[in-house]
Image (tube, rainbow, N blue to C red; front, side):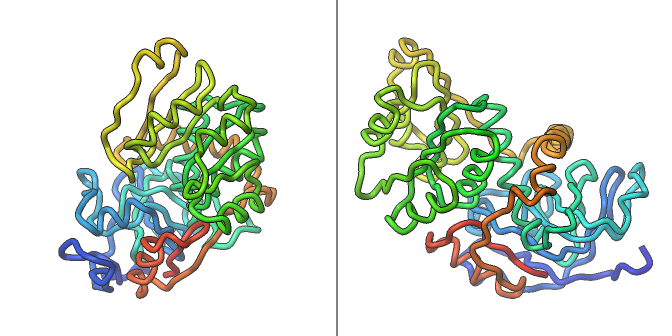
Length: 332
């Protein structure tokens, strides 16, 4: 670890608050434990959970650093015990439980994916969190396969734009909702099959019209609350409803007899608290099934805006305004 300094600049707020609490501070450079690598961070993705954590509503899981940041890209500069020496010096992107808003971060070696030659570090940093989330929920929990139709709320979010890209690669029809005509137009440009302005249209009626009354195979929902019973009305018989966030409320009232009569499945997941073994399995799967598309240039994240690490407050303000399309990234 000779070329690695003792201290680094990081964003590590003392107390919850508004974006203004995100100030650069000095912190010790972390040391990689067994099975981990130390990465010199080039870029870090900004995600909704980072905003929740900053406000005090989403504490890091046990053992995770207090520094926010769930995904990074950079260069491996040191290895913990039991890590393949070939990783040293490699350009990687990685999924983290925290610690990304810093000059250095540790990641389990199994949660790293190689950055292909044609991909820049900003793009690479914008992939892991949304790709792992969409992959596990759309393909593993909703069992989406070629020819299926999916309704996804938040079509221009980081999750939404990644889901559109994967739907196009894997042959799904994807219907998205967004909060303005401009965002709907952008979603269609990015490859959504249909886009519904939820502020001016009833998405239940539109989904029924689009699917000739049959409904969709799956709903990926990040709203929760009163969207859930409406989502169920959008599902075809034997359809799957996957909850991935509860931005509109953590409680819902649902018609149980409808679930029984139409054999609907309600499921959901959160990625961050899952253990390293699970995330490593997902990384292996993504490496086999999705990464060839990244290497070939067929899968690229949509980048909304890039901020230097020192302007993390502006990046969070941008996310909270809700005007972004795609991913917000910090450069280190």
